[in-house]
Length: 118
Image (tube, rainbow, N blue to C red; front, side):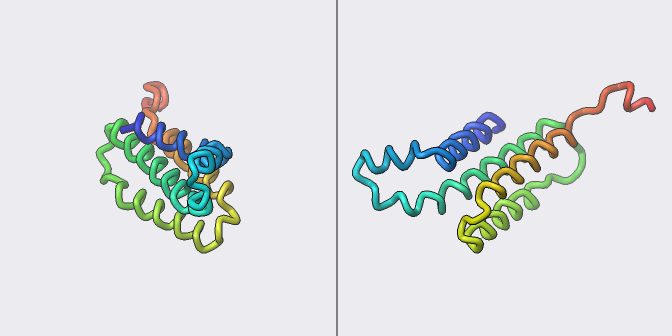
């Protein structure tokens, strides 16, 4: 699950921030679909980062309730904010989401034995 989420995030990020997908669509004669790519790619990026966050939780062996519904809500909220703002803060929101997942990973990492004793 972690590999799938990371792969999806990487693919969505590459397609969002570089013109690779635009060139491929225009080259294939699908230039009319280029305008709607952001409506698919950014929610895919957020969903992939949500999948990474959920898999990090599952791999951490936490006994607390699963944050699955919180993650789903955040993916929907971020996508909605992006649509409402008409992609004006797209890169900022994507960076905030990626940083949030990295901080979540740091939070879930097992503590060292010396830190647990103190």
